[in-house]
Image (spheres, rainbow, N blue to C red):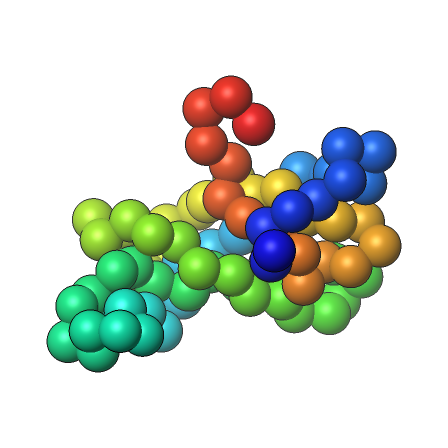
Length: 79
């Protein structure tokens, strides 16, 4: 699963919502949110922010895997 991160590998970062709209794969006209981007050691990574009220440029708190930053997700209450 893309957002499964082993507890010992979790790191926090801030990401920025970028102008890449995301749509439901099963219903392509259904807008589900935006992508976000963050950098680790000058390498850009992206993820999906399922918040349709987000605006380009908003900051998102995320969790990522220190060994594989492609494994990342927005922070939700309880994370």
